[in-house]
Image (cartoon, rainbow, N blue to C red; front, side, top):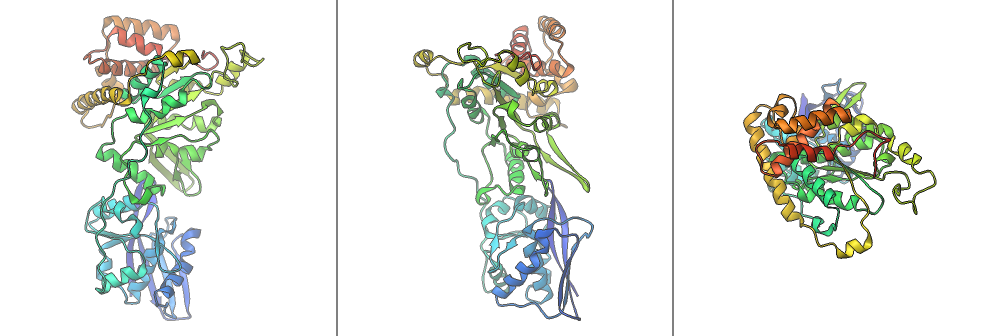
Length: 509
């Protein structure tokens, strides 16, 4: 007889069905694990053996063979511990085979028989629900799995609780779905004094989902402005919250199995490597751009990032997907993030202040800015200068609009975009103006005659690429939405052009 237990492997956020097969046959005692296991899976033999001993059971003195089918797919992760143990218990007659066939199982075993959290419970629960099966997972992640509903979720604290449940001597309670805590309040835009142009650019970027680059000397408020972007964005929809939570579940970053409801804000250090930023590594984990999906990725000191890491952003910025190539296949993660970047005009940061600028100015500015390639800058919709605010101006400046007031305008503009694109593009979901392209963009952002003349002349004078031309149209459409205008007019094109900068080496502060 061969005992079988259902579990999963992960390829990006997709799940692949895996069947754990156990054969107990006569012969010299042995314990073989086959099916392309990685190191963590191969070591499960010792964890399973110790866990069974801890609950008062012992492996039969026979030839035990465990196969992870399909055998030609690499198996990675410690979540195979519990399905292997359950398959052994079914083969030993401890657990009922018919009942266990109705579940997908995953979890990591401790030497005492306890269950530790593992990555990927949420996508596994959704896959189990689609296959009309329940899910067995560690107790700490029962709330995460409960969001998928389905046939039922069992979340035991340890192996003994699971055995007692199926023996009828203990009933495992159904876990409750939980949301993440609100956390600390988001910083308020009213804290920013002065910087009216930068505040306006931040509002426009939030309203249309546009990428934003802020250029200014140290201490001018670039990081403060970026930290206030999440507060301007509308809350996650149910679908977006599920997408974001699935990625964080795969990365093992869901706190207590609670689904996220705030838009992510990721701010990696400029020493981040390509795998850390885009994704990859030994197990092709999601990177910062995927963890920022449906949220904000803030890159401070942009030219200080490694050139390869920045160039790796070019494809995700266009496609909204991070594709990690491996010799045995490709892994793709969603990466529809909003880029907010900040940089100094030169290495010392004080290009326009003769008293503080280094002795290499202005040549150092060209060398510093040249670290950013033209194709990367071309993908950033809004470029804005953030000059230093003198101390006396800070004391005299009135408080600006609070986040709640600006967020209300952003939400109204986003809602208008949602209705527009739901009507014009029902087959291809378009969330905001930054996602519109092709004929759809030409239709919704077609300027009036005066605006078209201005845009044509500016495109010729500034040598705009086709991408840059379309990005100006997207920003102009957002400006029209904020103004409540049905059409894109000359003044919207004019303001959008002020946010378009020229290529590296000629950026001015």
